[in-house]
Image 1 (cartoon, one colour):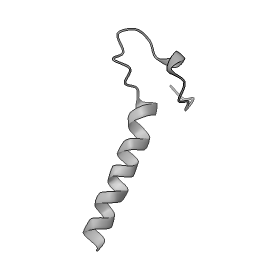
Image 2 (cartoon, one colour):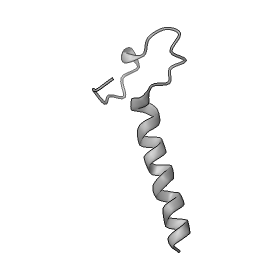
Image 3 (cartoon, one colour):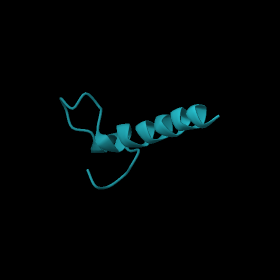
Image 4 (cartoon, helix red, strand yellow):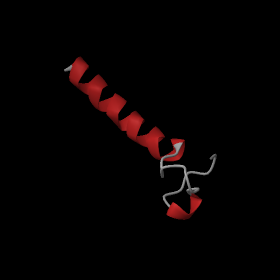
Length: 40
């Protein structure tokens, strides 16, 4: 989980192919976009 990689081989069966390494960057980008709209 500590290793950030885009390789699907890191996903385990039953994990729904969703891990914090996948969601983390997306949430960070979403937060930046929301902050940008609020500031502007």
